[in-house]
Length: 617
Image (cartoon, rainbow, N blue to C red):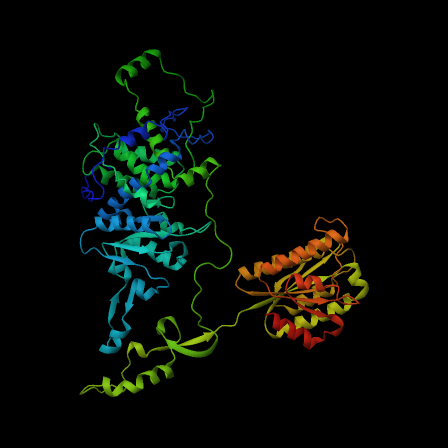
């Protein structure tokens, strides 16, 4: 931390000349946007055991002060990133496409030396283009292997901009993180920085493996173009160097709940760069903590925990107190308190709201398939198209047909090669992949169905199960009777298990039709999230008499059944309703509500049922 670093480039003409963070001094004094002094002073950072509840917004400087400093801090981050892209890793910029984001990107480019690489990561890039590999066109033309550098090696010493970084496939994110750590890609130098443009909504976020390696996190979502006139603040030479700058940054990281070691390490690099070769002072430490640690905060600091009387150390003699006071008239904790308040004031407003509400929500693994689906390499060929054989299956005959008409023009004197193939001649197969289907049978096993048509309904389900088994589809079985519904058989391909669960299905009790449709909808949505295609087959007489709460009553139960049917229709799931009533037409209203095909069991034989299921798919 005491080493010397290269000074930062001077600010661009648009940044102007500012006071030396007088606003930072006000932030360090803990005043909010209104200038009111906080009700309580932050505790010392020497032992940040936090037991106190979240402070009020005014106590931490308020959201107004944080909003006023967003653009100046963003410009300062742009200056630092332009000075050393690989050293600081890069920045995550959360903002929608627009003039504010483009203005910040222009500010970064203005800080880069001329001829510095600036690349954009195209969507769906392959490993050969990203990391490097065989240049197929040059290899075909030269008749010998010709290697080429990938995008990462081409960006050595510069920056790579990644649009829609929240949708970056996990494999590409892992390769970018590995290149940031090693500075190489396929034995080529790749010392670059990343600018991840986060355009996500709701729970969408950039992969933690990348954001943890980047020094800056900038949220420009609440800014307009009029807010971009503020310039980046400049630091004055501090009157006295900090005794232990690295220790102060580590205590700050602990106080704000920054668990990753990369946080204080990157903050130390920022502080050293801001000091520009001079001893690191409080202003540089404060600015570094504001830029790096504040956006990573997961809690608000509070007072140190009171030690039990039994564990407390005996107080020193009174004369020792007097001697210490004479030697240290100004406690060092006061300076750390001001730094703490300044960093607390720099917490982004959206993050501050989450902290005040009881903590930030940590990202969790999402269910289902994430990222972009892999290219289909299995299935029935339905044609060919121009493409790279490394990302598909080569169609040799189509490639030869495309190259044959041009052989007379391509072959020169003395060329003995039988056929000359160029990149534009290469064709890959178009494969149609069959989507797996899961049929969710929802069977009415109530007393009315048991008295009338439950045996016939079981026979119809067995016919449909046999058809699904022939197609190698999965099946699931939901039964409803009494006061609720149950999943008798989770999705499976085992015909034996399905028939066993169906044969052991008891009958009797009320008809909780709404609960049965809800259970079938839940299973179908889970199937769809897993990548399979669900279809619901509902067998019922439509005479609902038990509500979701378990209470009897045809009026309420019928209304809830129609409501559940409309929810299934809104989910966009294909469905088939088979009326098992003796008189028929009892389940017509339910079928209309869910926009499903309607069949009556007395007129539905095995062939008609199978055709109806295939039509619903």
